[in-house]
Every structure is written in structure tokens, then in C-alpha cells.
Image (tube, rainbow, N blue to C red; front, side, top):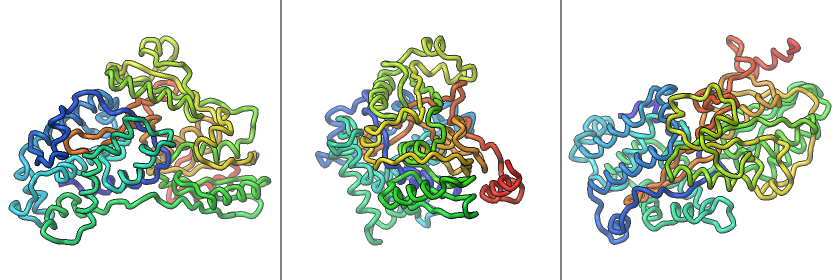
Length: 481
């Protein structure tokens, strides 16, 4: 049975993903391909067999082997051998339901009441018993129906710049659509003859129902001196949020301090903090430094195709501007760049790479327009900016903390951030069940080669004993720091 701590992290994963407004997808995998008979089993109304579920699980693990670059980091940082977890989970599937005697008891079910293996039971096993072993790590998860429905527009709308033929297929193929429609019906259905199945599949834990509110909170801590801005997530900045930010920026022009609080901000879109916070508040418009990032990829044809698509996408926007027109081999990268702290063990699995320029100076109006955001005028802030962080900063908020520190935009106070640093996450659908999966395929490092997912951003000042980050920063201000 999954430990309560692990299950709570699963809920955090759902929260994290539900806040993401702009997401990057990739092409589906090229091998192993389900044959026509396998991929059309459910379409033909044929009941899936144990072999079909094991095939999907093996497909998932092979796809991870070919594209996921963080096996070593997971073992060093989390103490988790993902491959071993995969072998254990496969055995649980093969021996179901006997392998779930203990789980049945904890759920108040007898073994006879356990549902027969089907696509939804299979989803529950990989969701709760595989991905839960390394939650919040490199965006690894299986979509539930809420998240699937939430992101269909981003991957299927013809006007979306994240819609590619393969993304469209992953989120609109008949098998996946049918699976998530059935899952929603099961979740929303009343307690009936399928109550035991519902109990096992969802394990009693709620699913996040949609995007979270992004209403910012603004306070004046000390008139004409200290202002406070709390940002719960980087998602869905609507007209009211934009208006609030403009009003704040114009009103604090002569303030000495601006405190930006992103504690417990689980992420969203990097565009929002780049275009609506860092760019307008940047004081020295003639000095917008770069914070180079290095992305490395595995050597399979599948991983390379994802990486090439990433280059094509990022070159159209301002987030991460590739410094070469094409991928470089790992040997060429190491000749051109000095990355002394790149893990020698991880290096053995990496074959291609690219350097990204992430300067705020890259942002032009057409980038903001492409992102669907309103333009934000510049309000250069000459006072001191403080950024409050903690271990619940992931994805876009973790990247904000990294950029703010490395670019000297803000002084960080609080706790080290979480992780899930990435420029590119991939979506895959399993051929027989239609379940859609996601994980990062880029091994992202800093300018010395440290994996950002292994070495998170640390604050300039840790919390003082007995104080939280806000109390600490106010004391630092009074001490003249």
C-alpha cells in the first residue's frame, strides 16, 4: 500500500500540473509500435488481456529507457531505482489480484471484491504504485481524466502553437478518448455495483478538478517603503491580475523594497514571470544578463526527434533561445563549453545537447502577443527586490527562483526550492489502454554542468530560527541588509 506521504505528493503533482497554462509536448514514440490488431482491440470491443496490459507496461518502460535522462539523478537524490520499481510493478500487474491482498484490506475490501483487471485498474496501478515512488520528479505522471480534459485544447486546437500532428493524435485518438470518458463516468458515478472498483481505482483520494485561481495578493507593509506581492501560481493571469500588477508597479516606483512571495507556488508558465514580472521591473534596461542553460538528450532516434522539435519550438519564442541551429553531439558540446560538474555517470547516457540563452532582453512584443498575453509597460524598480521561496516551488516557479538569483534580479530568502526544471516535457499514449503519460526528456544543467533537478536553487538567506521567510526578510530589511 502506498504510504500516506507518497499519496499526498500525488495530490501535489495534480495541483502542479493543473496550474500549468502553457505546456510543451512532443511527438509520440516510434518503437515499440502496437500492431493494428493491438491498437484496435478496444475499438473492436475486444476485451483486453493480461498480455495487453503487460505490453503497455513494457512499452512505457522502454519509452522511458529511450527518452528519460534522470534514472541516475533519481537514485542519487531520491534513493529510488526507477527500473527496479518498474520490475516490481510489472510483477504486481502479472500477479493481480493476489499481489494486492494487503491493499484490499486497507481499502476495506476482500480479495473476492477486488475488481477484475481492466484498463482502469491498470491505470490505478501505474498511477499509485509506480509514479508515486518518485512524485514531483521531472514531471513524471499518468494523466487522469481531469488533466486530460484540461489540456485537450492546448494539444488539439488548430491555432495552438503546441498542437502538432502527434500531439493531436495523443490527445484525440479514439482509444484515449474512450478511456478518459469511462474514467470520468466511473469517478462521478454513484455507489453501485461498481463501488469496489471505484474504491480501488481511485484509492479514496480526490482528483483536482481544474486550473487554480491566480488572484494575486498585494499589501503595503510600510507606506512608501515596503510593498508585498504574493503570487500563488503562474497560471491564467486574467485581466484583473494584469490590472493589479500594473497598479502595483506604478504605485511603488519610489519604494525601497518589494517582497515577492512565491512560497507554495507549484508552477505554471515561465512566460508569465518573464514577461509580466522580470521584464517590466528590471531596473537597468541596458544590462539584461544571460543565464545560460544546457539541455542534454539521450541518443535514441526517439529522444533526438523530441529534442529537434524542442529546438524548432523554442526558436520561435523568447523563453530559451537556442545558440545553434541544430543539436550538437555531446563531444562537440564538451569542446565548446566548460561544464566541469556534469555527472560522468549520467554523461554515459547522453548523446546530444544545446545551449540556451535565457536573457530577459530576448523578449519582444511579438513574443508577448504570441503567448496570448497583454503587453505590460516597463516600470523599472530601483529599490531592492526580495523573493521568498520554499520546497514547494516546482517547474516554472523553481525556474523563476533560479533566474532571479543567477541574474541578480532578486535576493532569495527562505528555503531551497523543489525541482521539475525543464524546457521540454513529452506526452505519450499507451497503445492498448490509451492512457497518456508525461515526463521530461531534457537533462537540464547550469553553466557548470550541475543537474538542476539534483541541485535545486538555494536562497541567499535561510529562514532565521523560529521565523518564516516573511518574518526573516523583514528582519533583514531592518538590519539594513
